Image 1: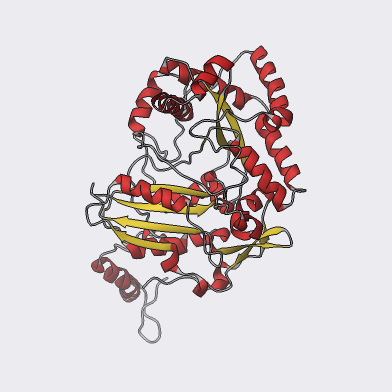
Image 2 (image 1 turned 180 degrees about the vertical axis):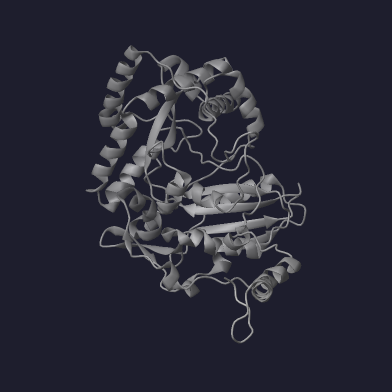
Length: 456
């Protein structure tokens, strides 16, 4: 039996969400968005556990001890007078564990690809708005001897940085070899971007242009087999359609990264995505390749950036779940024959993005404009923003290897390991001290009138 705290122990005030959070909540809270069949935007992740049959009651305990301490994970999301409100559950008896944690037995047959199918299904799922907007699915006894925790969380609860920090708090942090840092917090960027002063000046000027004008008025990518057709985006439901490739082994990506000093995992993933997209177009004989080669057209890859201070800690992210997202984009170097050159091209564009003020400008301009837009205008803006580029990439931090469920706070306290003999000795010490004092008094002190010796 898992005991959970009462509502009073987790009480928190109603909270009005930010404008970006409102944007992500509209597919669940706005009738207009529901009529347009907008699907909620979710963060979906698979976390693999080394134990094939983890203790479900321990996971339930951690949900109460850690996840539900975060206000948005125990709150209902609703639209009220044009604002998104998080309404905390009055009583934790309103929390339905069987809805938020589902257990599936893989029977030793379920594969990692089967898990990827669950990810696709999760992206297309609608929420029950009468409950907090998140779900976990524990898949036990997979074919490879592991288990998997599938985490599905609405983006309205926070951005990738804060929500992944909440989820990682459920797992043990394994120390890095020869260091005290945990694998989930270790920085893998040994090289800093080195550019000339003139390059920084040019990047600053271009960042100002792109942030205020360029990325807002830029044209859409040419039609291709991967892009939502512009002619259909307003006459068909705007639901998501997902496709997935096989996973890229992280060990292989790290091997490539080590051979290209200064590159980041994101640089490599963008390069790999560009190569894969070009290969797809070649195999399907997509006409867009001729447009790119003959007409100078470019295809773009969008990506999300968490606009946060570099010194933000994991504890800060857990304590302040919110959305601070900016969407940027790079031009995919389609047509470049050398895979190495593709990666270097992506890296150069990302370096310019990092050293320019475009992120700060996009954040402030977007936050300002959202204040004045009704739901219908936000819907139009969303369709325009996410239908211009050919692809969109996002990632979140996760454990570097198979994880194990963290201990509960009570289990982390060291138990009393004092032997019973020592406890008996502790009880006898006061009695021995009294007896010793009495003996000394009788042996060393002079006799008084009553014949009792006392110490001088």
